Image (cartoon, rainbow, N blue to C red; front, side):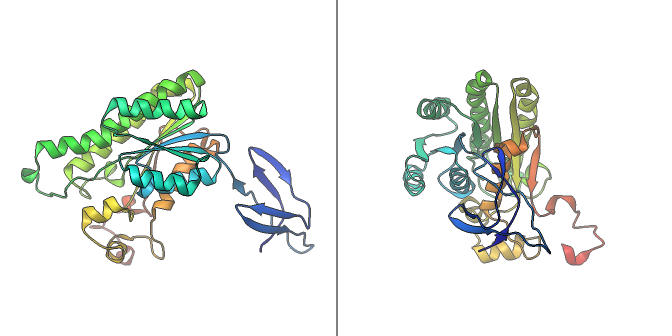
Length: 306
């Protein structure tokens, strides 16, 4: 139980709670109290996606699953698009059928992406948020001579072409509506080099470039386009790529002391970019890395910080 007093952001409107009033927020009960000595006044935003419809590719696991759960918690109708049918249906069942639905989608196939967008619009009447999250890492081969063309093309197809098709078909239905938010999952390796395979690094640079170009084009239609770029997150994709367990990944790659980056943290960043709280944010690459990309570990006067 927490004592609180102040104004709260509820479905885009403000109201001031009365002293002694019980408030139910996300299943937790709070009591609003007034104190002559101290007043706690703050904004508590909840249900920030109420009335919105979101389509999430790669939503059956990892960051996409966390985003699906968080978006639904904040009031959105969520459509999960993935090739992992069983996992996707399982997530939807947990989120309740009225809040979430699943559609099979291979993001490298335009017909699948087109169908996923059409399904969201047919089911809910519109599409407010497109989260291009599906991606693969490929095989970690540090020597370019060991890299083959087919695998490089596969990573580019899923990561870049998938984001392109998602952006294209989201724009198709958002342009007439004169609004919308398109988000793509990029990576810190889209900002710096040397932290992932050639294919994955190239693909994430491509995703960020696509975001910037489409942000310029689609802004005239009221559509915002952004990226979220995670550092190392404990997802099945990352653990399989590095062949490490949770503790090893945390020990080797957690650079912000007393904190571990989780898929839920990236979902929170996507929630912000998808909500009206970021109504004037477009063309932005939101890096969530604990400060990793701002330091040169080979030349740093704070050796204990790296």
